[in-house]
Amino acid sequence: MPLAAVVALANPLFVPLGQTVLFTYAGGRPYTAEALACGAMVAALLAAVLWWFASFNRVMDTVKLLYLFGRFAPAVSLTLTLVLRLVPSFGRRASAVAEARAGIGLGRGSGTKVPAIARVREATVVLASVSAWSLEHGMATAGAMESRGFGTGRRTTVPCWSFRWRDGAALGLMGALAAVVVAGAALGATEATFFPRVAMPAAEPMFGASLAAYGLLLLLPALVMGRERLRWHFSRARR
Image (cartoon, rainbow, N blue to C red; front, side, top):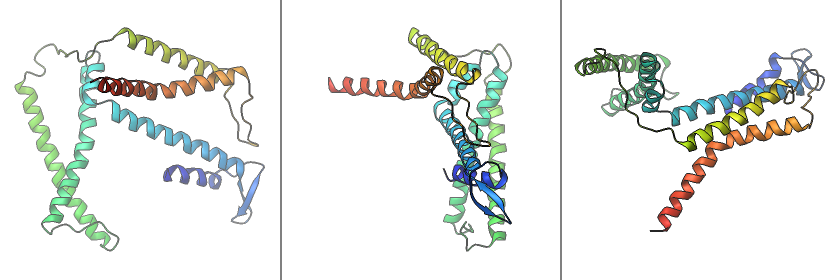
């Protein structure tokens, strides 16, 4: 949220367009409401993308990625899985090393009172330790994969999930909702302009249908999760 606020407030500083001037600065350069609204839209888009990635990282673990792409692109799926596991483990290992050094009195700390050179030296030591651990862990992983026969034959996968009729129905519903949203965008029913004046889409049936379809598409995960929680609550209440 702070990043989105900074993007929204900073956009009029770089885009001096629009008819509604809120104030001027730097010798008469305008700070307009239209540029602020456009910045708010860009900030909301940035926040939505960050939430998408956070949700994807929360839902899609390495097992699911291997299950989805293991048959079609085994090398790519394996590389992607290793990379996705490396970044969080690298961060956890760095935190553990920093805490261990601080526990034995070798850490320099990270506060504002610590000189910048001392913080850089401390970060360099932690990075060297974590890099050595990463290389050692990679060698151990490669050895374990070789000992298990990796690359010696046709790769197989374990079916952890089965595609049921409810999955097909949910996929069809999502496709239909996405088609309505795409149709509305292609027909210009959801188009908004910010310059020279803010103009929102007209309240037409296609706009309402696109908005309702997009809202329902966003609410589908929450509806599914709520349904599962209700089923779990009632199943425990019967005991």
